[in-house]
Length: 320
Image (cartoon, rainbow, N blue to C red; front, top):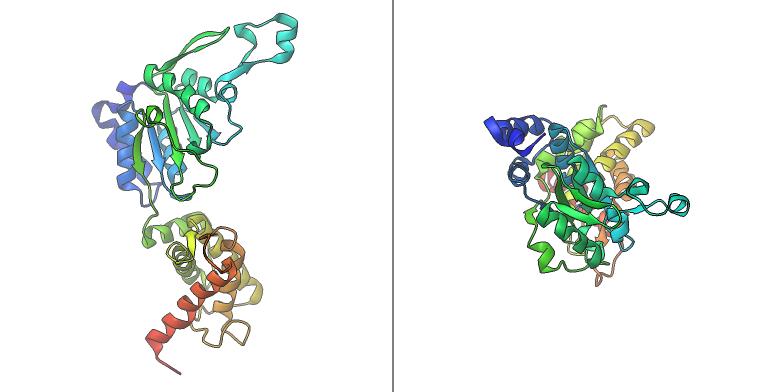
């Protein structure tokens, strides 16, 4: 599909409408992303994990009928891995030629007119990122012993970055940043995350509705806890809800009683107790504590659990 095919006759508006039936809580960001790629621009999506960045790109490329090629940004991503290499065995037999060149994801995306999606963009070495400059500026690159590779019109470079993660990352050069448009993609609101958990989890049962609401609430609380540098994404909420629902089935819990003032392990109500277990399993490995925090993920989650299942119910029911 060409750019003119994508943008003429309100096609972008139709694409947006179809995608919104599959992407929850991303109306504004999707509109911005469609406008950028529809205008032929390259893009960086900046936001924490689990905020539907990949989901949006998959939906857009599926609508356009073009490939989405994934690349993980890390210290091992060399220019050769991005562009491609000559098959060593064939080089020994035949010498270098265009026929024995094995295209890397950049060349594949250019030749197929797809999106080259580089996750954790700021973890890749600077010389590798500089390899993209010509492709973004001229939509063509020169490959030694192969020749010129010209991109199809739907080729885009899409990058993603996590602003909360500064371990092993590098600052992007102005020459790279100057060629990328930027969209900030933050967490969805609670209602949208509840819809996501419901859709992706497929949770059913007597406590399913309550499980979804509580899983989203405690997961969102990890993002604002003072000891946490980066909280859990909606993926954590999905896993928390799924595990809690399975625990309810295993333990025969059919009533989502929110009051656990006895305290977990001391005769706590079965539902709050299983929620604490589900939180520890699903969220303890997903949160990143502040370096100065003198606590553990388990203690943080216990605090969040107490706020949700002891303090909040007490506020509504009064002291016993």
